[in-house]
Length: 163
Image 1: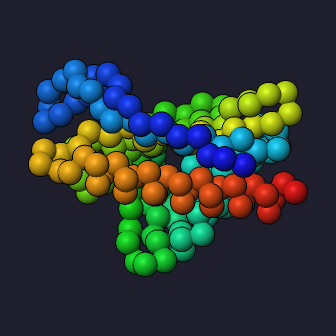
Image 2 (image 1 turned 90 degrees about the vertical axis):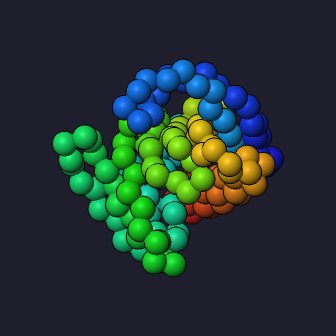
């Protein structure tokens, strides 16, 4: 199985320093087809509050409802703690935002789509705005490596739970 990926720019309108701005954000996307149904794959990777179903580096997680939305707070094996805010949710996708070093804005989407009548495709997309002065090439490579690792962990979890 090969992983499809792409990097491009996309138009967005986002709030920066209390001002709406039209910007071009970087977009990185990885896609992997699997020999399982959309429903089967989504049962393994689709719960926003249960990242540990597939992310082996997560040692603790909880979901909090706050005034500005739903958050998952995760603790990684290395001790880092991340707060991720749920931005959108659909039947087979969710998008979250997180403060990530080197970015002024960062949103990631986890989705499962029908590849054909019997196979699903996991699609992971990150759209981000690099901070001024950041090496975009290095940042893009770092994000791509993170996405590839996440996709591989998802695939292993789906294989383990659906085979």
